[in-house]
Image 1 (spheres, helix red, strand yellow):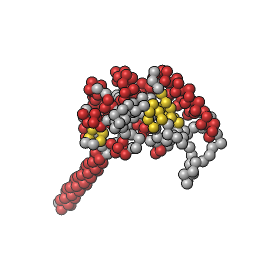
Image 2 (spheres, one colour):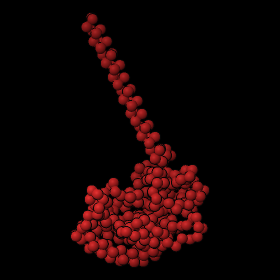
Image 3 (spheres, helix red, strand yellow):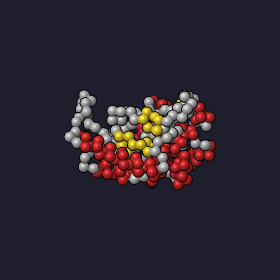
Image 4 (spheres, one colour):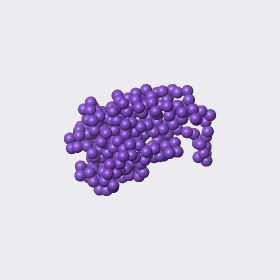
Length: 282
């Protein structure tokens, strides 16, 4: 009888201990999840965006990444604020999500009408041995790209605040209601609007800026017409531990090859798109 009571009491204690352990695990897991959510919110990933499935499929920078990037600016904050696309004094996470939908469709359109993918494959298979960036060395434009190319990416800033109300509604609907970023309707809208969305404007001077000084490429800062569509081709160089460039025997040959591509493709792409196209070479 005593043995039975002992066994019963022992089992009861084991059940209580098991419940206690599971409670601790659930509480700890909940706290970790909450911590992760708070960190996401600190990076600008608002609650209102996380609920949409499409957000997880797009490559969306954080608000901080955009705010801290010296080359991503010249947005019309006043216009963006009027259209509900800002969070106080900076672009909102909502803006960046909508922008990512626009970028995905613009890139899909460019892949359809230009031979960018074929050119990327040629660079990948070229016997000169071109090298792309490692993930940790990619800039924000490369990270945002949905083209899944190794060497080529779109370099323009996309100022979606210049879209009209109905066009923004199309992006909003796709972001919140659909599971795919790219549609024929959006590609059609993007093909008609991108010349205004990529245009660089002088917001302070109040005048149309005719050229834009891009970041340093191959030792220079090229001035490019403000309305041009700009692509960049990566040609990553090797550096030693001190940061000095390691000279390659075929370095000049690589540069000459890319210059020929640049000259040929700028002309070809400009004719296809009926707008100026410039290619930056790293």
